[in-house]
Each structure stands twice: as structure tokens, then as C-alpha cells.
Image (cartoon, rainbow, N blue to C red; front, side, top):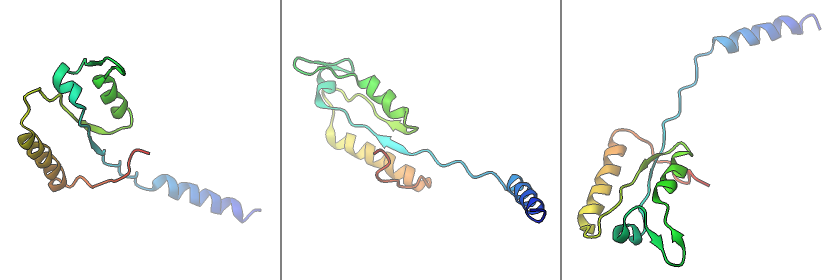
Length: 106
């Protein structure tokens, strides 16, 4: 027992001197809403399913720690330009060294 106490003290001292672990990089999530938001806006209400709750969806996703990329698309959106814009944003993040992290939300 006498031999264990100095060893335990040494381990405690070494563990307290270890450099702090690097904080994990936040992950990025792209949320692309449904067509109803294009037609009615972010406060859209479906006659059968009720309110779309666009902003509540974004808040729920942010609560996971993700950096959310989303914007309400207008009814006259040019999908080619929109897709190019989303793709460019993703490529920019990759070029900045943001790692790809599949299956983040389970």
C-alpha cells in the first residue's frame, strides 16, 4: 500500500500538467426547407400539417451545436444559381479546412 500512494500522486500530478485537449471544430449543417416556405414565407401554414415552424427547426438544429446554413428561398428562386451558391459555400468550408463529418446527427 505504501508503494501505491506515491505512484497515485505522481499520476495525478502528471494528469494535471497535461495540455488541455483542443476544442472540437463545430460542424456545419445545411438545411434546405420545403417548397411551402418559398410560396408562403418562413411563417408558412399547411392546411393539413399546420405551421411549418422554419425558425423553430433552425433553433432545434443549432441546439445540437451545429453551425446552420439556411435561408428562406423566395418564390421566384433560380434553382441553378441557388444550387451553385450552396455548392460554393460548401467548397469554401472544405478549402478552409472544415472537416467533413458524416452522420453527425443520429
